[in-house]
Length: 375
Image 1 (tube, rainbow, N blue to C red):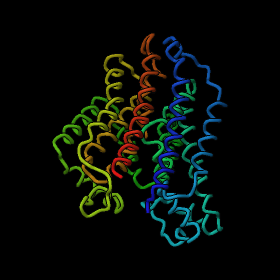
Image 2 (cartoon, helix red, strand yellow):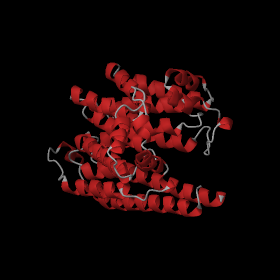
Image 3 (cartoon, rainbow, N blue to C red):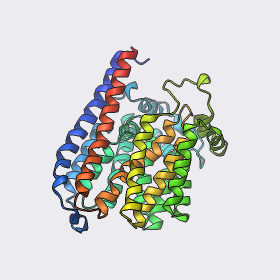
Image 4 (tube, helix red, strand yellow):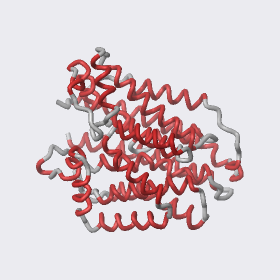
């Protein structure tokens, strides 16, 4: 039962997280408006120590949080340690073939309920750091804070633990696209932690073969029109293509489920997810940026976000939205921190970074108000 004390713990823990990330982002981002555009050509890597300090503090904060229903999934995983639940689960390709054996091993060796929570926090946060360091060697700390401050990150790190690990590994796969074997290894690991990554694997393959960004902008616009017109045929089609768990997310009738949120066309989320699209349009067609790395990131984001919009009316569409929104902060800031736009590009980068964390802060405030008004 979700008591007022549990609600309070959840809100307090998340409020502290978002507030600290916001303050650090605003303090560090302030100096970016003073940089000249030519700085992007610098080959000097930023010192790694400050970023590692943030990573370690994040692991401690997320990994050592109280075992409580306030953090949803973690209670089930903690109980599974003591009940030895995972030792009887059959491992298949569509059943988290890395996550399940890891949990079974820990349980069979009588690991404490805390152990998998800490390990998963390490995998999630450290893999995110590896990806960000590869993407942004000159701006690692501000980019890391941008990812940590994005709308979906806290939820996947705390509640959707498996999905959070899978997303960090997916970002590593995209970051190491120039080293194909390493990239595919990270993609394999990502899919092994959460079956929803089959969508990301498919998008990776499509974007690797078809590289024309105009094609993906067209798909994104088509998906937006379908969402506006309440077209659900694609959602049903995807439901027949995925595994049993994925089909449950897409095909469950709201009235027949315990779904407690709301569905329908989400103007707020569409506006949020459209910002990297607008930046991409300007970067590709106005600034004529030819970076193959950026094109791949943008194309994957456009395709993944389009799939989410085609499934927007599913009661559990947030499980799908987590994937493009995990890529969103990278797609948002990559062209401004890695490509040359002009003398004012760092001022624009700072504005986008501030807007990213401000949206997260605002939505947490809205959720907090909603909970209290509902009660």
